[in-house]
Image 1: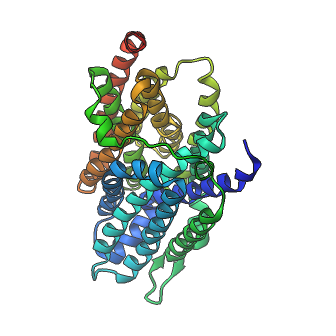
Image 2 (image 1 turned 135 degrees about the vertical axis):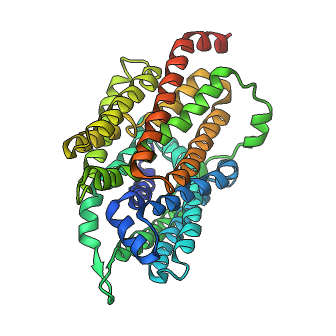
Image 3 (image 1 turned 120 degrees about the vertical axis):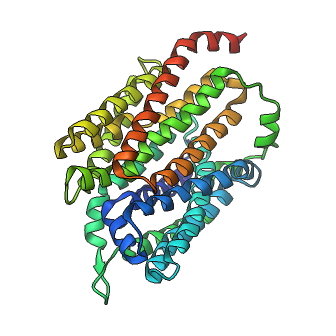
Length: 401
């Protein structure tokens, strides 16, 4: 690794530190209540704004990857950073607009935020892998590490940035403005910093659609793509709706500390799972972790206690968000070594489709209904994980032949 790229890597990781905040703030019960009061809607309706992030990813993913390969990681990172700034500062503008179109403004800005996420993914994931070329797996796990750190700090950040408007309403616009302006600064820095792909000769690569046309889809490959859907649903539904369940069903007045335990579980899982993968096949986690999530959610749904909600947040953070989607993508690459890019892109598209469709549905449901939907979805994920594990050896053998 060339040391001149270390500042570039740090700037890339800081983008995901901010992303951890941007992706989770709309799932916080405190922010939901503030925005809902400003826009004159129910708190659960804010979940539809979170769903728009998935719609934005769905729109951008098919061309964000090829653009990153053709124009370079720098262009993708700058587009992603500036778009994320529009999303975050737009949320502040939407709050100020109150019931005069504020909800609609936030929805449009969230779509832009999803597009930003796609460009950051396709620029930074390969970017850090190229910087730390001898340990690309560790490099990409570092992205999740920075996300989990920022999400662990969210309850404290909310306490620092909360203000009161002239009308006496609580506001988190300070957080939106600071995070948005920080993205602009990071985009400016990455524009000038050196990157490996900018220093190397570009190779012409096929786009997503060309690869899809040349791909033969087996039942196993379809199962892996569906796992991208179910895995994302497990932690996204929990992240966006579990605090509402704790508040409305369990009777917990301020469940915001669930976010800290969720992020702590994610943080520890990244370390422990990375060590375990040296002795245990990655594919085993695709079955075991969803089982842990399923048992946890059933217990939370049935017992309805603050203690179990806290423990549940930690376990879902560990087994649901602690790199499981990345592990699923890694297994895809091992099973289908000749079509890594295509299968990876399709898993991420399935992930984005889940984010949009299920969170849109959740916005119209009760917290209990969302928890039950998550239980059913995770049970499907357990069955898919079992199927892939049973077929794994055969799949590897066939693809090697």
